[in-house]
Length: 224
Image (cartoon, rainbow, N blue to C red; front, side, top):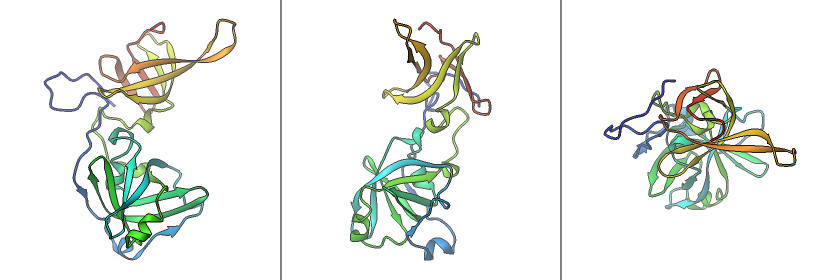
């Protein structure tokens, strides 16, 4: 995917950002969503690309709505809660799922209504359950926007071809995302340890992100 640094006057988000779109998502289409309720799920039915995106913290209102704390904003998949047709729930060894009827942003959380959760008492029973969404249902991004989950595990090399390590995680410092890159190293006694590099995920340093090749090219020296 192409990448590049945007100037300060641009109205678009900086490289790697993801704008969370406010408002209410539409209800899933089809008769199944109208008739199907909350159901138990087996490991066999659990989607292979399920990504944990939040957790139910409380009931919202009296009609069965759930209050969900998204683990992060849109760049880590928070917006998928607003658009996914089905939410997958897990607590301990129990797993459930249900069609999402509606969802919207409310203050600093997301609230949603699932089929089969009809009142506040039913919603309260789901407190503490982790919420997953199939990666295939994440909203599409612009050409220079990326979900964090898609960057983790990618190899990082600099423009000279020097391997710098793999993306272990990303950090949000408020202004932009930062790649947390880990690589094998040794301590002063020669014992193996894991080294770490922190590379700002902005166009001045990140030159290309090739998800097909599982590689990120950066303008960053190995001794930084």
